[in-house]
Length: 588
Image 1 (cartoon, rainbow, N blue to C red):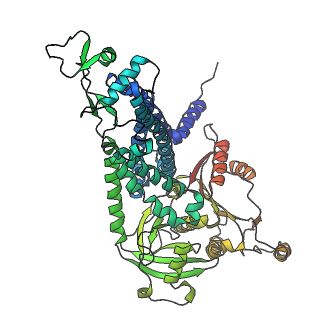
Image 2 (image 1 turned 90 degrees about the vertical axis):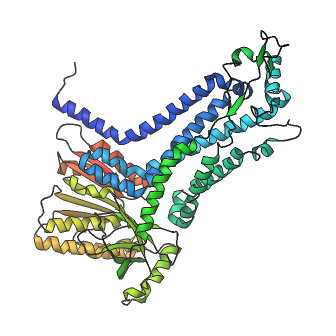
């Protein structure tokens, strides 16, 4: 018999809390599946769609089920990208909700992508079903849909109904028209093409390669969401999907193979074997009901961003760093940011529409806010020219370009003080948020403020020696400060150089191995060569910090994120008093 102990109960509750990380995604996925199934059977079994099913069969339920899924996901797709709303909720939940629940908001962009994938799947199903439906409507004029003679006769009669109460939207036989022509005769067909083309362009330009290398393409094509939503609202306005309105007088299950007459009350009619002609009406459009609320929220969000973009930002200083990196130090009235938060930067003189995300590298304690920008594209290169980065001399503020700032916005790094131990993992330029975080932690530490955090690890994976040159001054400052205060154990930073050294540098490193400072960085702690051995690092953390909560914060690629997430789960203990790793990833 299983022995129930306090440790077992706490461990079970802890596992439930960890599973909660994926609970919202599970609820969303279950809602998609359930809503599709319920809608399918609603249309598949409803009596007022009997005649429509007679023509097009079960694809009616498939088309309507996928349409229901599209409505659900189109309602949700805009909410995760309302950055001000997400930041507001994150700040509010900090006061009233557990950390595991609040961390759901950190995955808002991932959730946005999941919803986009669901929209693509439902769109493909919806298009396939309706292509089949149009073919069936067209074939029904020649009674090619089924082999049964009575059913053929009924389908032909339904297609020939040409009053306002018609059922078949195609008024011609296949001899005089075709599927493509009929599609472009309807609002649903034209709007469907607009929806599909917009979706294809949005999704294909959202790949990581396009986002990283051609951000402008990603930015502009994403604004095709405007015609996408307009076409979605108009898609059902014509009422192509029609249902029977007079099932009380004309029971389709009894009357489908009987004679229909328009005036059943005429004197020469025999009511025993005749039924009134069925009447049909189009479904009223419902997509607008789903997307109107989120669209209002989103446009309020954009109004807030527009207001912020008009606030004056003063460029106080421009600093040129190695490795094609430059720093902008700025001020704006009322600007307050937490450690590691990010802002969107616009330079109207370069582009009136483009906003680019950058992590703040200044600490909340600084009297300015700053971003470090690497010159890797047309926009960043143009901004460097506008800011006179290459002139190497002080420029007056009035010579600086107009800069607009939207933000700041919250990130997982706001939770750094919730843990006894923090582990920061950065890849290349991904170290930028930790510049702000480390400065803020050090300010609080030097001020002897009471805080839960007792130990900080920084693991920085650099592709070459140039990658860490601009960060070197900050780390050297920490080195000096820790030596002066006699507290060299508070910050343990580990720099890993993966490539970029030649034989001469390697020889120099070997000769200076016994020196007090590292030969590559000039820092107290030695540089490692190669990639971190995470399978050895995590056990050492477990051994060094038993019974503690460890926050792991990553700013880096997805492959590394997946690996670290698995290691956090593997090395977390379910026992009472065991070490627990909490994984956090920052994404844009």
